[in-house]
Length: 138
Image 1: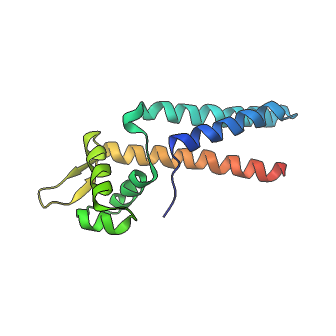
Image 2 (image 1 turned 180 degrees about the vertical axis):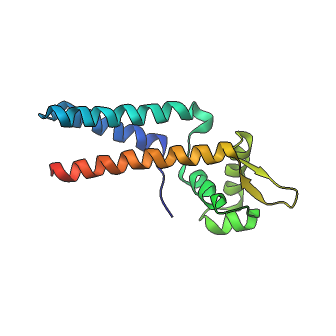
């Protein structure tokens, strides 16, 4: 399963990118790094305030539900968390509209949840590009 980054990890990566941009000598590299910083910042901004900060367990729940509706017990089985913690995450995701519950008791990913998952994938791509740039420098 793909690991999505938390807001703290995103800020840390943005800090590294800013430091990298400061130390680069190439005009082209500077612009490429600057574009990555701006992309990461815009993605963070689109996600909004504290209510939508995505922890790893919440991201995993979205990924699990991306495959199709699941019962609570199936979600718990897919995470290494207690039932109470999973229930808390589900309640938060449901409250912000990323997931919903069907009449048969299964949870599913809403359109808003699919959009959030796409944003998380975009952030992941920015971070992968950062990693590749760091390997080139080393």
